[in-house]
Image (tube, rainbow, N blue to C red; front, side, top):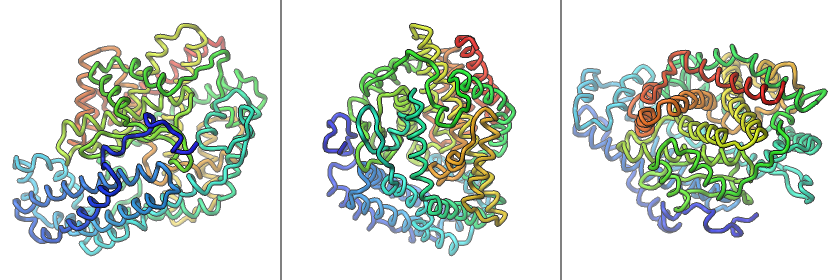
Length: 591
């Protein structure tokens, strides 16, 4: 489908950011000309000058963010439109200049006496920047010279090119072949591949799986080179900033203690027998002599054909999130009515789904909606991101309004989990209940187990690179296959295609992002259980978290909602949720 064929109501209203391309261009020119932070250099020991710097930086960053969001969204509407590819590139170039302009800031602040920095923390004028000042103090041992910081800033576009190269392959240059589906020959797409994998037609699942992976493996040398380059970039930056490892660098950047990552991996590894049990159940229910990875998403419950139009799905999401209160439901309706969402899959459009925040404007959501149960939960998920953004921007000053990536998946997964439990409660027959229990199991498996598996792969791949081990295609595939066997067990066939799955994961180009999905669902399960048990007090605490932006470290902010990830208990609760759901499912299925 071409974008011009999509009804207006299903396109995001991008004019809420800039009314026209001409306004974007004028704003870009004005913002570019305003880039002048050198006048502050050498004067940050004066608190008045420092405050002016912070406020000027807020204003510039806000304008640049609006420009970047617009360019990103236009680019994702259709990546083949050169004009918006150029917009995207111009913003990247300006961002690189911005980073270069600010190269003096960290080194100069690192040279300040700690007594001066601590005095600013008690100065009410700097209340918007107190958390940033605490991070500046913490970063002092990892600060490089001004010349080094300037070089890193100048290289920003180059360092970010690995993801851009992969994205162009994944969205434009990947030659996905034709496949016959529902009586028509159509081009296989990322969205259609997901639909087929969730279908009950095993031969078609196998065909789609083999064709899909053949497209990726035909480019294995190129993608290996791009991914290895991305990892070498991570290693380079961790060394420059004086960290012992890429993981340490990533965790420090998020202000997250290593214990959280270790608690997650340890809890998932400890409880893998329940995962193996689920895979064995799947094999038994499907009646397969051999279970393959194209069987992992196949429906296990017959007689349930759950399909929703986008409008029906959105209405269901609003109903399912009733425990969060009328204000929350009203904001969901506002997003629908005022076109925060871009719904249809079209030619050249960015794949998958995401939410994106925009200063001085509401957030936006990109979808590639298909009439499946999974897509209903995708709406809930992305609107969770969006309303987290909404509450943080509404309750925090700009400097603290953008929450850290570590907590970014919490609100989205709270929405999914609440919706799932609502649908289970409302299920009118045993078949639908079985279906939903199976869906919940698959959601936890995909978000908690699978993302932790990804995290282990990332960690091992980066560790190899840190030890100067070349990451060839054979090394990466062997590494991925070994971790996959540990996670999925012996009741599934570990073929060559699945050993290449690492090739198609966009999040790997943002190292140590994926484990946050797993900590996100862990926190979400704990929050939802508390909301459903305690009601309004738990909701109020949850809204404190949603409204907290980046006013403190993310682990402390989660404590506002009653979850302490520095302890093992939340992870064990999440693991028990999976096992208890599996036991209930097995009982209903008569296994």
